Length: 275
Image 1 (cartoon, rainbow, N blue to C red):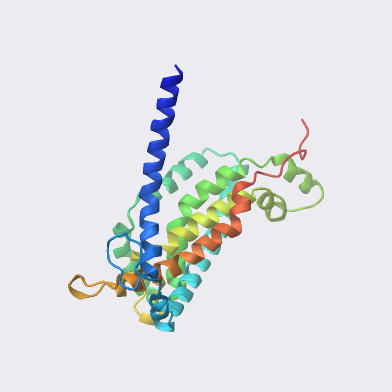
Image 2: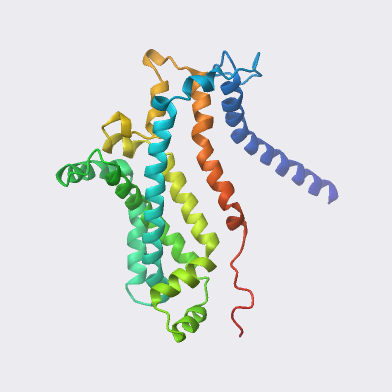
């Protein structure tokens, strides 16, 4: 029996190590290639360490302007998504209706639609309303594309906040909006953090939407400008591509570090409601 348990543990550990390797090896290639003077597709220790790849990409045209555009687009889209998701999830969580389930199933179906299927009518609509090639138009579409799943997540987290806390606030004269902002959202901090990180990451890595809706090169985000490293006839500057990838991943890593405590924490409801 002990031998079987040991074999199962070894098999489980081997499977986990193999799974970890599938994620670690590409990351190792990015880091090593960014520091290698002669990077290629092979994963190997660099012959020497150089910062020339970073010096080549750290310019306004290649890195700083696209990153700023990405922060504006994804930050604005995430803020709009979280705000609208909280306002939409609140009545779905607090008020019972026969229309709640059909509405939730409808917005869940909206998340199944491929983005390529809706881009043609969206592009035609944006041309008619003069939102094509504008940052605000792209922010609106980013928020609209992430909103259905964000509402689902926000509603599920909001269900975990006892309604009795809001009723006590209503007794003191608070409105529904005040109870949402001052009681519900602070108590569901982990949920807000999850929706924020999920929305930001999905927008940050989106290539197709800004590529279609933004025409001016100065407005393109980093997710689109990274395509410039792939030259004609299959020629790629792997070292500069890896260096840009390291810089491009930094904002997402910093965002996760900032909200890591919220993600790991629980709802601060202990002792708030007595049975």
